Amino acid sequence: MSKIRYRDTRPEIAFRKALHSAGLKYRVNYGKERIDIAFPNLKLAIFIDGCFWHGCPLHSHIPKSNKRYWVPKLKKNLQRAKAKDLRLKKDGWKILHVWEHQLTADKISSTLKHTLTFMTTSYP
Ligand SMILES: [Zn+2]
View 1 (cartoon, rainbow, N blue to C red):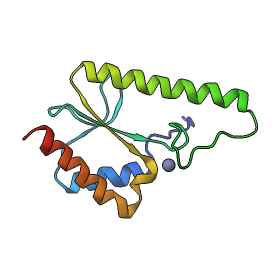
View 2 (spheres, rainbow, N blue to C red):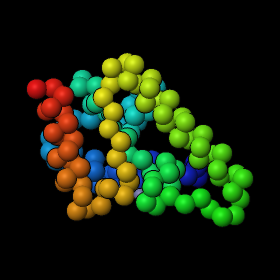
View 3 (cartoon, rainbow, N blue to C red):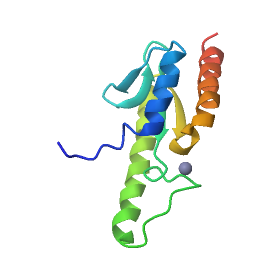
């Protein structure tokens, strides 16, 4: 039970609370693709990408020690994420990726607005 979970990160929880108080119904870790935040009836998938795990251009840096381990590991991680996107797109999902670092308190509302805009523009 001591498995590290990097999914329920603080920024993600704050974001989910914001969605919730905006009256939006979502599912967490949804479906076999384990969508971070899913709106199944709209087929909108939101992924909160960890800066480290997904190679954020601003914050990701590969640990100097053990580069041989991390380079292929992170590369694989990205490939998996891309493949997942493709499968979901094929299934008719709209996909929104949000960097973990974008979910600071002051940015959550703008991200939320963006999500709402995205939803209304996709489904008038
Ligand atoms: Zn970042």
